[in-house]
Image 1: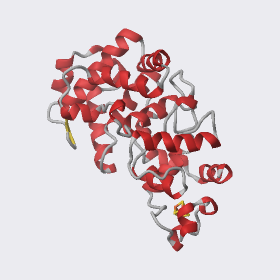
Image 2: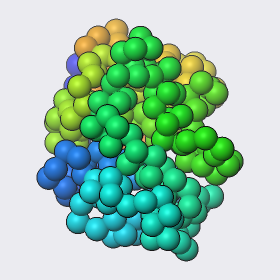
Image 3: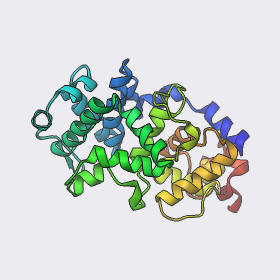
Amino acid sequence: MKRRLDQLVASTDHAARREADPVGFVHRYADPADKEVVGLVAAGLAFGNVVAIRRSVQRVLDTLGPSPAAAVDERTPARLRRDLKGFVHRVWKGEHVAAMLANAGAIRRSHGSLGQRFTDHVETSGDLREGLARFADELRGPNADRSLRHLVPDPRAGSACKRLLLYVRWMVRPADGVDLGLWPLDPSHLVIPVDTHIHRIGKNLGLTDRNDASWRTAEEITDALRVIDRSDPVRYDFALCHMGVSRDCPSRRDPVKCKPCVLRPVCRAYRAG
Ligand code: SF4
């Protein structure tokens, strides 16, 4: 399995895929402070149609100006709300994104960076899930309505929290042209961001038998990948996810799509026929 997954990573055109991925926005900025704020926006809004996601992320970044970190650090919550008035992406309005960004600014002013605060939470709680939950509590703030709770979900509630885990993967995993290695946390702690693609491919490869895209499924897939790479279990996420995004992996054996797949020898779905 490891050899095949390594082949998949080696055969993935990371540069081309990165540009089509929300993480591409993060790479446009040089300052680590801007990168962590842009990552929060890009991962936070990574829900729905790819074209709409890109349009919405760009709209928020245009509003924040050349230094998104300076904008969230300096602008008041009322100013951010005003700046994002009229913004809509799926169930989220400008006021929800503004609340998340205002809270991000408050965290940065108190703790120096989002990464430092997140890492402190993981280390003091001794647990990625609880550390992420405490971090999300602060990003969401008190009295959050349903849409804001959806924008910044609570990992304790059991959902896969794909967008939060995606953000953390970008910031924590070693820099490899996609992920950035900005936050001082050991990548062995990470949990894979499970969406419909990772769930399907995870089942095809026998990494999980679970039918729900939940936190438990994310942990189960991560545990299976940890056997392959204990120090960096989510290193295959980008390549696997883009295999799904580009519709290269069906949910059942497909003679045409499966023929060129490097994972074919280790694919349970392919063997099942
Ligand atoms: S062999 Fe087919 S079903 Fe299995 S991982 Fe590859 S493309 Fe997906």
